[in-house]
Length: 204
Image (cartoon, rainbow, N blue to C red; front, top):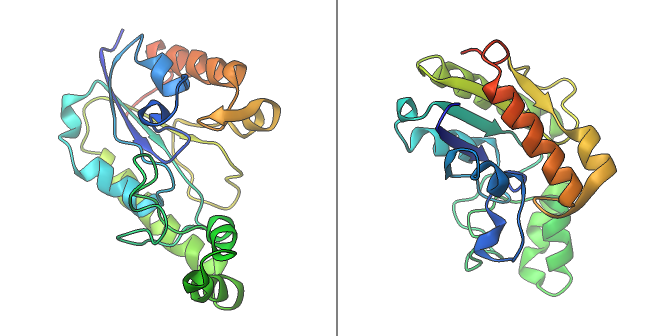
């Protein structure tokens, strides 16, 4: 069994127990591996790349990257969640800003940008380039690499050794890491099996 596991990514992979009681699949993985979890709710692909840059990747036997959608806009400081213990490092997402703009008119300019100026094709282009940077960075790593996603990944950058858990999310969505207990268990079991299968996960 590989002992050390680095997790990077967004809210699907973050440790929600810093704010809420319960457990998600990253917490269950900590029962099988020595886990370092750098994932942060609400972060975009650029911040996931920064997570990877912040540590010595060769200290880990396995690196798991949970990728996010191209729909987030990078911000250094979030205008709403900057004091929240779980979401303080979030980037902008339209639905979240739209909801908070009902009571905070200062957010209306962000809503206006999303509704009138945001270009999804450009966002996908930047997202793809960031994914390529992640892939290139991980070519220097000696351990195993596993990429995961939890939402539609059509026409986005294709990683080797990637599992899309969209089907699990559709059937078993819930609160902790956006899954119910059954969904979190399914994901944990599949990841453990994938990591421990010496033939199924190879370096990019």
